[in-house]
Length: 237
Image (tube, rainbow, N blue to C red; front, side, top):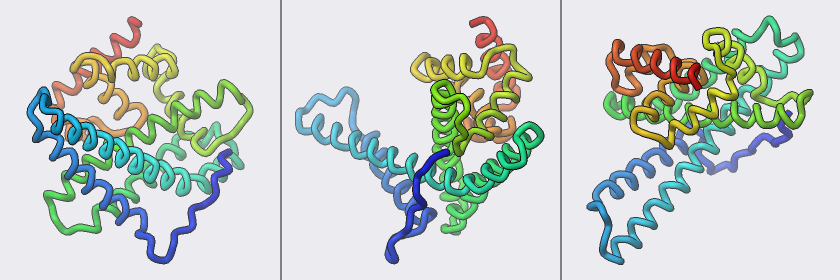
């Protein structure tokens, strides 16, 4: 299990929700500035500014991921310790529900900071994207650690194992092999990138098809076709 200590905020340090909003707003602002540059960027001065913006955006992304990851792990730790104490076999579905509850609770707190419908809708999509990255990273980290230390118990083990059982129950492909393929697809064609996101949102994030359609701006019929095509390609591989 992780030995990371609980973070003790300074008296003047903003809470997780306010800090995340500040980081999201900075990320949006810098991303919009980056999109203003014509492509390709030819002037040396513009190239330097462009490179600096990309570097600052990457730093913000790392901060956002670290913040969300830390929050999820700290919030889940007592839940997962309790689950392991009572035995995992009969509690896997409960683990998934509890994880989803933690994620949604965090989102609700962040979105409650602003009373602006457009901002809330836009930010909700951003939050789901960042949470998806965090959950994927946590599951991949667990799989790597499990290979090295099969008997070890870590913070995310119950959730990751539940996701593996669920995926392999409905798809004739090993979970680890599928995750490796999704990682390759994310660097592939536009169609492969969409397929990777659909399966990640479904089988790692645990999102419903309605939620995925909203997140990716897809029609339900189109989403179903993409999901079936993606699963068929996974089985072929």
